Length: 63
Image (cartoon, rainbow, N blue to C red; front, side, top):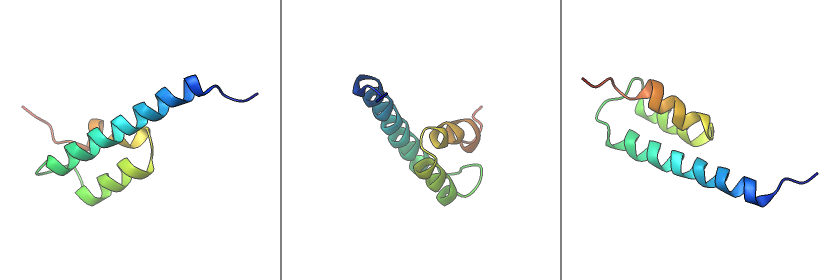
């Protein structure tokens, strides 16, 4: 059974949007929780989970 491209393409687009958004946020942040270079590697190489980890754990607390 081959997967349908109608299901795969939205996931690829979502992954790319998450990666780009997380990278922009990480680069713009003055401080992150942990080394910035490590967060960039995590975002790039752990696909969908990497950006989510950055937004949950890597960004500094505001407020």
